[in-house]
Amino acid sequence: MSQHSPTDAHSRRAPLTIAILVAVCAALIAAPAPAGLPEAGKRVIAVAVLAIGLWCSEALPAGVTAIVLIVALVMTGSVAGLPEALVGFADPVAYFLIGVLTIGLAVQKSGLAERVARFFLHRSRGSARSLYLQLLLSFPLLTCILPSATTRTGILVHVYEQALDMAGVSRQAPLASAVMMALNSINRLASTVLMTGGITPMVAAALIGGIGWGQWLLLMSVPFLVLLVIGSALIYFIYRKGFAQELPRLPDEPAKKFAPVEMRTLVITVGASVLWLTDAWHHWHPAIPALLAWILLLMPRVGVLTWKEFERDIGWSSFFVLASSLSLARALKVSGASDWIAGLITNAVPAFQGEPYYVVATLLIASVPVRLLIPNITGYLATTIPIAMAIGTATGVNPMICGLAVMIGGDAVLYYPAQSVSSLAVYERGYLSAPEIFKFGVWMTLIAFVVVLVVALPYWAAVGMTLTIRP
Image (cartoon, rainbow, N blue to C red; front, side):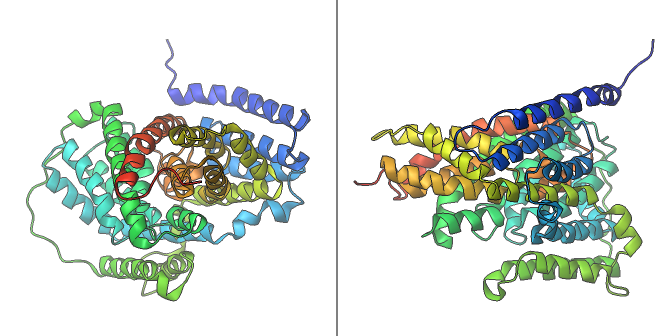
């Protein structure tokens, strides 16, 4: 009797999945546009459904889906032409990703990742639980040094990949999945505690307005700490079988001196981090320090990588997925689809005058399809926060609370890797599948709702931010 692997079964299902998604896309294009939705917006939404379906099902490689998305935007008339469809490839964030991935690659190639991996394995004393706990504790600690979740993930994914390889843990093992899911979905949450921790807090603070650095830390620390703890516990429960695995105990060895390539990698990485932490002074886009690090790491006699190593080992699929998702976010905005979606949110929230909890809960529920359709977190925030704040004002709920609530609801979840730069850095390593990430995203959606309603709202009231506003 022949045996078929899950990969074979997936390959057999892929043509049918693609056919169904193309048919759904064609049906949406052929259907009349709903009231208030421009024709171009309807077509962009249809293409978005196709792309999200392909990314979530993995019917095509993620990079191929990215190119399908660009071609579909042009062929369906969703955008004015090919230059408009390729606008995401000119976005600085795509090149920030290249720089960060290069830093991670240099950490691996220089031997720095193996050094740190040996340290963690030695400290774990053969306990998989200890290794996992060390990873979780590193998130908030490293946030103070590397505020960008993408940078932390780009480095840590190589460190823990080395640790898992040295411990003989296979890529399909539950322990490997647990570690990579934490890097994929939990690591990001530590950054949002700081206003300067990444794109999400900076964009959200700018859209909401009137929030200082210290106030942001006060308001976000408790909700995101609870999200970190519950999310980490959920990963432990899902992959609990992997934590029974015994890891090899590494013998005590005298510390080796840092090799020159390790020192150069460390200095360049720390230099980039200093530039990220001091952006309030020089006002450079985060892509500039990342690209400076990229230049230095590839520079003869200074760097640690050759151009051939960079070409061969960098995650080009991540670049294409991110750039195409930025193009999609732009198309949703320009076509009027984002405004139409925002209108749906407005209509979905009845005038619950005097019922602030109902208002916040309804905003959270209404924001889920927006987060699903808009892959770019900036596009999500730009769509939901102004609408949420306007609804708060109209219903007597503190508009700042409404804005923060939908920000938490969107930032806490990832439904597919294209929604996060740091997620792409993990996904390309092959430890997690897209359906696996989607299922965990559904769980985190429910957790985010509970945290906002049960933890955040009472906590914000305790620190002086009232839930309701006086008429």
